[in-house]
Length: 422
Image (cartoon, rainbow, N blue to C red; front, side, top):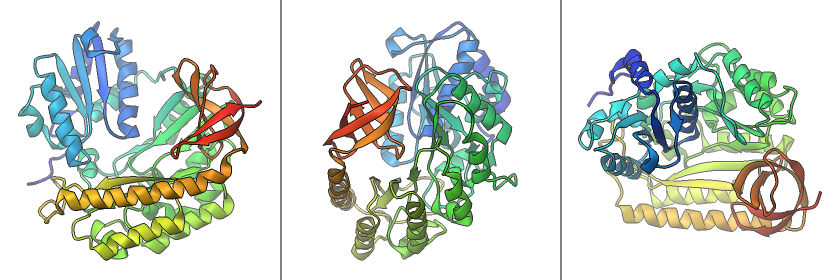
């Protein structure tokens, strides 16, 4: 089956008309998937507010439902279709990746109005306001320059299209002026920024990393294939005091043959070189990576190489995903493993990773680190982030953006319990 072109939904003009039709409504928006999808939602909400709509926190209070969909893996696709079918009798709008590549599947369970994601960006250019709150999302590019053989996202988001640097600067500045403590830079591959326009991520970080104000930038997911092309300049750009010393660098496998079949464009040695170079400059840096287990054709030995890799690099977090065949990808026709194999490998890798987290975190208990509050969890409990992006739950009423020092008291593997000491 051919991959549909990006404009075959109904076109940007039809999408913009769909957005314009939403006026003076009570709208409930539900978002799934990556930070980029949440960025689309944030922009759409700003447009909807300007059109006189009220954004409500429950479907029961709404006369209009908007679902921002994700279809990155099979279980998510099935969850989307179940959720959409629940709203088949409501005034339903759908956006996100799924209607771009799987519109027929959606129309088999409901008949929504489709908002192509690009139309959100077109309408937002006339608004340019940013939401209040402790977290801001800034999209710096859409689409991807990669050729991964298993990924449906490129079919949904297209080839790389970097946002103008001035637009990014102005959006970051708007968040800074609202005293937003954490600003997340997101894209399908953040480190590919500017490769289609003659610019680069290091240049962008230099421009937005030294604005006056109290804010921290979290650089989003970067592909090792694009990081290694500009590694030295990127490491230098991370030196800003306004940038969390945190990298999300998905390796996906510890086996070179598997990486070759995945079409990732780098070797295990390339990945390890990037990690070592960042850690040489920033020894306390937090490393998050992703692993796909049960990739089609992955042997037991190749899976063992992935386990060995996480033992060597000792990441602070591993996102483990069971391989899922996706339509519109080169590997869609290939034979897949039974779910039982993928579940076993996922369980083994998660257990190995959690052992590493404990080994990394235990020596930190009793130490004191600076933090900034980036999330109000509930009354009397907040999430603070250290300069290396360690999560610290502090059971006090502290306002978003407040800074201090916390003593780390308990390890919860994925975050710490801390107490404010200054």
